[in-house]
View 1 (spheres, rainbow, N blue to C red):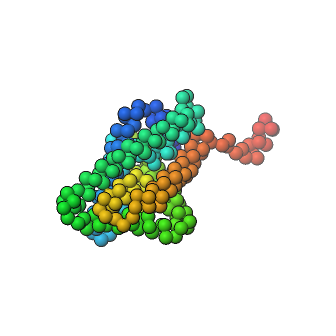
View 2: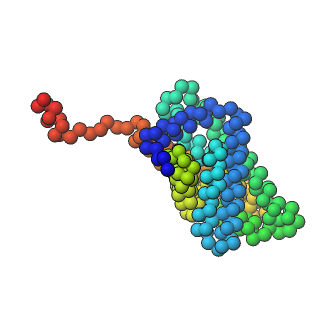
View 3: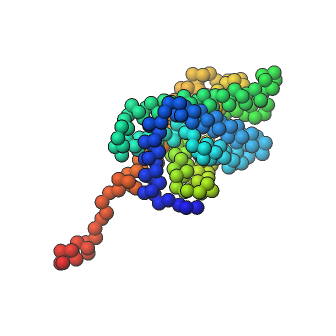
Length: 279
């Protein structure tokens, strides 16, 4: 599977972050749009398989197909650039600034949302035969997810907000590990296996992923979910984005960078010190 050692793939992470900061606006938006659209289709697929089989585990096992597709095609998710671009700034790559990083994040957010929203509208048409009937079973399931994961948090107040934030952190810990997984092998099979494991874990544990939610909640609203746009923004999307940023950067980006690039000096045993002095 052509495994790369950590020092090699973490260097690739920094290189990727630098490349994304300097990418043109057009390419950044196109790649983000396609990433959001493909991940949304994967979410539909996972929900449909869950409904058809009655097993959420089946949906979780199959969802990573979308993540693998979009990263093999070189598209970008907000959750990924949250982790990669700051590393280029920490590594003092020439020309990489906080402003450039924020620009990249903003463009990727817009592209991801537009892609996910496009699929939300298209699948709503499919689930309702062009809005001529009530949503089918999969559409009803998506609407129910929207209610449970907005109003379900809101009824617990601050405790619900904390839970939402932590779920966002845990999500991008795993999702960003999947992003790294695409870099630890030079073969397609190695990349897919390394991406599949953490993505399956996040989906099975129902952690909160900001781009998946860009599909689920607008789609739920279109199909009659009993929650509002403000419920979606305040009781899901905004806390989830912040949690994704903190979790991915803290648990994946900074930890890998600090221990594999900016390594601490090695300890020297007392025996070596004694031998050195004697010599």
